[in-house]
Image 1 (tube, rainbow, N blue to C red):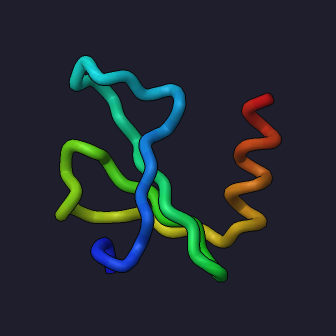
Image 2: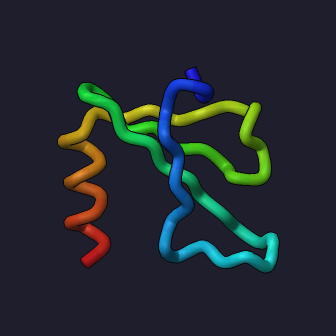
Image 3: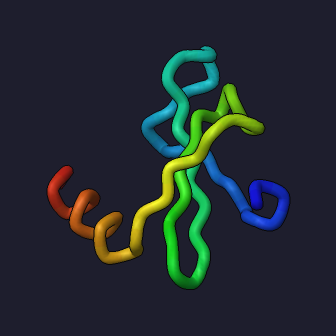
Length: 58
């Protein structure tokens, strides 16, 4: 799955090696992972849930 998704690093992450989150979107899901563990587990949510999370953060 990770090979077919286009992952991008969160704008809140930096290049110092700290907490880094990557996100990839597909038609029916939003995928999240730790950028330091690209072959590790991912967390997947529905797009509406991701939008609600982003709205909550504002």
